[in-house]
Every structure is written in structure tokens, then in C-alpha cells.
Amino acid sequence: MSGLYLSHLKLSHFRSHVVARIDCDARPVAIFGPNGAGKTNILEAISLLSPGRGLRRSSAEDMTRRPEALGWKVSGILTCLHQTHEIEIWSENGAARQTRIDGKSAPQVALGRIARVLWLVPSMDRLWIEGADGRRRFLDRMTLSFEPDHAQTSLAYEKAMRERNRLLKDMVRDPAWYGALEAQMAEAGAVIHANRLSALKQLRVAQDGAATAFPTATLDLVHTEGEMPADAGALRQALADSRARDMAAGRSLIGPHRADLLAVYTAKNVPARDCSTGEQKALLVSLILANARALAQDFGAPPLLLLDEVAAHLDTQRRAALYDEICALGAQAWMTGTDLNLFDALGPRAQYLQVTEQAGVSQVENAAP
Image (cartoon, rainbow, N blue to C red):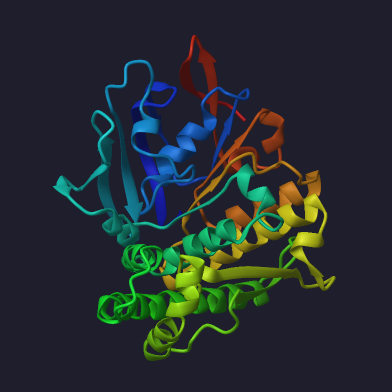
């Protein structure tokens, strides 16, 4: 039995779901139904059980069911390392999300201390061929799974950087205005960089030690302005030295916000951006599985896996291999697909939910394999 799983999930006025109640055990959960029925909405609700904005990066207001717009609530019973927690997350009238754990109000970062959640969604299929922003977010989600405080550190860095950028755009030249902000950026930026490098190291180990049907990726963290300064002191000095150039650009040009994640298909020595669509998907699946294996060692339990339309671009053999790896890992993976037969290789190793939609309302029912 998995060391981390949801045994109960309830959605109230969340997107297309007026009310949905799901009771399950620790096995993987296969969710099937037509496009637009509300399958991904279930995964999005579960993604809110971790720090951050969820797998769609939506605002609290966007998640409320229309036209009522009454607000929404997601609640669940989570078992993690032999401890059970009741989690409630809600928003009223479009206000910021609120979180309660075991009946007590809690900050979002507290969710990262009792659970780990990873996801793979179709929008990530273009990760290797689009801009660096998406790859940084991908890396930071993996990093956050190892270091729950990574999100708070990133927020502190971004806040200081926004204030520094405002000074740059206003052409403020007095060094006294910059010193404190650059010190904050340097302190947080050094931690962000160290966290990312640590996460990549753990991913490499997890890939190297695995026998898998999915290709491994050689990963590298690069920066558009050359090497990232080695420590907080060096980063602070680099920021100070770059003020004139940054002022001309109207923004900060040095720091972890300028990082990019590069991947190479190891066996072929081909950059991920030049691989076929199927190979790019397989590399993403490989990294998610490596992240899950590393977390099983680091955290003591595999994470919840949210795999939306995961069968896309995977042939029958790789699909079966993915299910085998999930079951061997002992992870509760929540997977969506349009047809039940996409999950044939899982058989009784999973539990099944059918999602249908009528008049804009989603319905969730248990189904047989």
C-alpha cells in the first residue's frame, strides 16, 4: 500500500462540478470520459493540495462554477506515512484561496510538508520547443517537491526584483536605493540556485539507477548571462555591477530568473527540442517517474501523480510500461483518458471512474475495469 494517497475527495461548485464525491483506496485511479466532461477538473482540484497555483495556474476566481459564482471548496482525506490529515481548500466570491489542515488554518507552504504532488499535462508536451519560462516552472515544480520552502524563497526573490525593476525603469541612480533590494535578491537567489542544482542531482541519480522503458535525459541548468554567481556575495556584487546595463534594459538581467533547463536524449545524444513528438513525451514521462522515485527515497513515500491524457503519444507498449512502473513504485496516480480501453493494461491494479457531462454539469461514477 502506498505511503501517500487520497482516500476521499469532495468538490463543491468547482468548475464543472456542482458536487462530486470520490472514495478510493491507494491504487491508481483511471478516469475516463469524453473531452470536456470534467476529468481534468478533478486533477486540478487535487493539484491544489500542494503549494502554488495548481496545474492550470488559474486564479481562485477562475475555478468557481459559473454562472452561480458562489465560490468553491475542495476537501480531502490524505494518508501520508501512516498519518491521516483532513484538508480543506476554498475560495469565497473570488477571494484568495484559504487552507485548513486538520481543522486549523494553515499557509499554503504547509501543504508541501505533508504531501508531494507531481503532474504532467498536455500543455507541457511543448516544453522543450517553447520559451524558457515554462522550463523554469517545470524545474521549480520538481525542486519544490524536494524543498517545500522553495516557493516562499522564490516569492521573496520576485518581490525584491519587481521593486528593483521599478527603480531601473524610473532611472533612479542613487546606489542607496538599490543596496537592500539587491541583498534580498542575492540571498534568495543563491538559495533558489542551490535548490535547483540539488533537485537536478537527485533526478540524475534516480534516472541512473532505474531500469525503465523510457529514455533518460541528460539535464543541464544554464543561464542566459553565462555562469550564475556561485554564492550570495558574488550575486550581490554582480547585481551592483550590472546596474547601468540593467537600467538601459529596464529590467534585471542577472539572476536565477534568467535560468533555462536543457535536456538531451542521452542514448541518441540529441537535444530534446530536436526529438520527435513521441520522444519528447517519453522524456517528460521519464523525468516525472525519476522525480517520483527520488521522492520515494527523500520523502519516504512516492508522490501523488496527476497524469492528464497521459496515453497521448505513447504506443501500447510504452503505455503498459508506464502502468507497470507506477504500480511498482506504489504511487497513487490519477490518470485521465477519453476511452476505458486506454487503461486495459492496468486491469484490476487500478480503480476506475467514469465522468460524463449533461447540461454543463459533470457527473462522476465508479466503473468496472
